[in-house]
Length: 329
Image 1 (cartoon, rainbow, N blue to C red):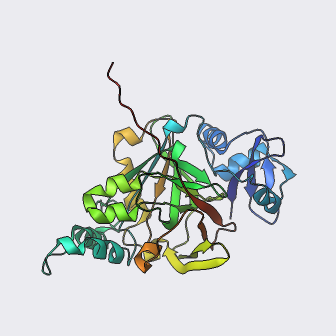
Image 2: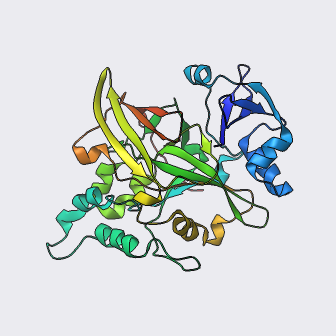
């Protein structure tokens, strides 16, 4: 199984690393995964074929790179404003429970919440047959590439946030080709990181709660995603593990197919602009906030899952208050 990473060398230069066996090696002739993918599209090759054409160079010790903080995002854009960050929720079996409880107080006993209705629409129509259009999922925007953090970096919650909670899930990364075709580069581990207390206040604040940073694991897993992915979400506070639960993903554990989620994102012309990168978060059913955990600055989020070999680890920090002044011209 091919994995692609971006690793800083000891001199600080970005190296693209291919890892399909026991030994990760530098890919010759490219300085970013973005450049590698562009070359592959232009040549009509897959990523694996393009790597084979370029050849491999020096070995890379990923353990040493991780210890020295040199594992970067699996993909980056030279202009982060052209890296669109979005996702879909209520996509996993069981994912409605926490959201439904959050919003239940505003509903009568007889009337299901909008969250539950959206979830059931996915259960009933989220996996259409080939050639058919399935149920439209919930969709949200998180920002652009300036919001993305690599493993080992802090996830910084705004000073005005009411919560900084983890969301362990899988994400896919796409590059839009010259003719507007979205090319899926691969899948990665992610921490979608949201403000669940703000969301709980009113479900119409979901858009606000999602405008937060997010973290991507270092590996870009190339090819098809396994139907069943099982991992662990963990929070450490000092020497103590205050939360540890399994999380499930992959289509066997989802109410929507990946293809259906992709269609409903890229059906919009504005998301098919040549040269843009996209990362799309696929959702989760495991949240520490649903188990009464209130995170604090300094807590460490750890997310791991097979078939990924490297974990995603980030510390929670809180930004200093920054006054916002609006000026008229």
